[in-house]
Image 1 (cartoon, rainbow, N blue to C red):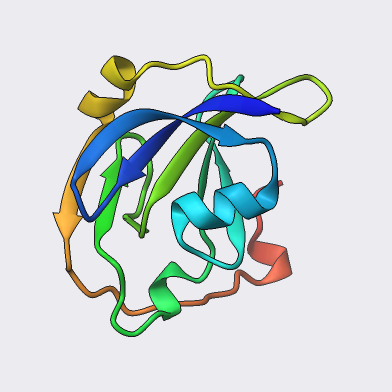
Image 2 (tube, rainbow, N blue to C red):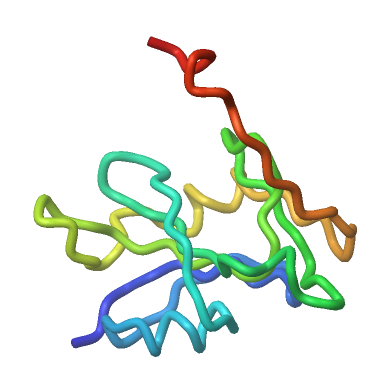
Amino acid sequence: MLISAIKIDVVKQEVYQIQIENDLDAMYEVIDCQIVERVVIDHKNDLWLDEEGLLHHPQPPKFMFKGANAPFSGNGLICGYNGEGQTISTTLTTEEIEPRILFLGDAHIEPQCGFIPWDELPK
C-alpha cells in the first residue's frame, strides 16, 4: 500500500512530497540507511531518520528541524501515524514543513553519548 510522505533531501536541499510503499525497506531506500530512528514531531506525525547518521565516514549533510535541540544527519522522512502506532500518510504539507527546516550542509558533528545518574533524574 502506498502512503504519502515528505522527504527532507539533504543533498538537493529540498523538501518535497513523495509516495512510498508502507514498509521498512522503502524507508531505508528513501532515507538511504540501514537502521531508522523515529522522532515524534506532533500528535499525528513522525520524522524518520538514519539512526547511524553521525557514525558514517564521511558524514552525510545535516539539517535542523525547528524545535529540535540538535541537528539531524542525512535525509529525513515525515510520515503520519494512527492511534495503534501504525505508519500512515502524513497529515502535513511541504508548505508547513519547509519553514521549519534549515539545511546545514556538510558540517561534521562528533558523536556523543552521556549518562545521567539515577538519583539526578527529574522526579
